[in-house]
Every structure is written in structure tokens, then in C-alpha cells.
Length: 105
Image 1: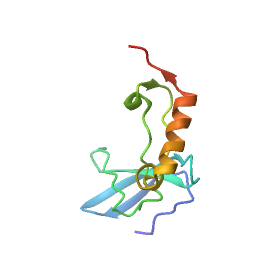
Image 2: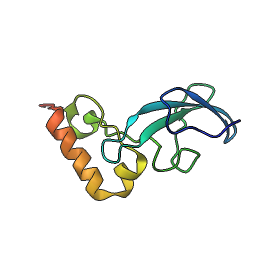
Image 3: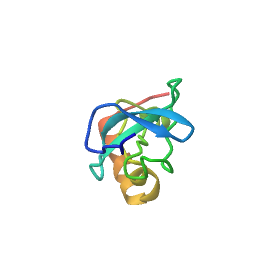
Image 4: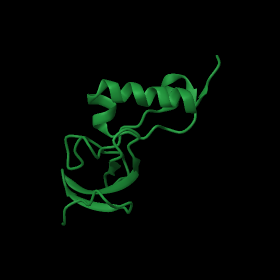
């Protein structure tokens, strides 16, 4: 099995971590611009983990508007920008608040 290509938008196969995984492109990180991906096991279950072959800079970890009381598109982030860099996280959260619709209770 060849190495993962982080410059492609096509699905890829990865063998390891207990079996064959499908790696799917999710989009470019809003903050750093890296391509981000999610990994799925052979049953189609999300099996993404930044400690695996995708690493922190290519593992997708989006901000989901409904988690913050908003409606709209997810903000695409890599794991590093969403979890390890507080300035990047707050910049992405501000983007979410400016581009999504606040849900009124």
C-alpha cells in the first residue's frame, strides 16, 4: 500500500490500524489552508484519529454550527487549528458566528 497523498481530492485506501480504511477529502482548513481528510473503516464508520496516519495537520475536525447555537455550513478545520491553537480556534469561531444564522430559542 502506498503512502497517503495529501494533495488529492480523491478517495484513498489505507491499510493499517487493524484493517483497510477509506480516506475521504473534506476540504481545506480555513486557517492554515491544509487539505483535511476523514478516515472510515470497512463498515463505513468514522474512524478518524489525529494520532493515526493523517496527523494533526490533515485530520479534519470541523466546527459544527449547531454545537454553538447556529445553523449553516460547517467550518472546515484541521485538528491542529481547532484544538491546539487557541487563536486559530477563536478566529474560526468568529467566522462561524459571522457566516451562520443564530438559532433563536
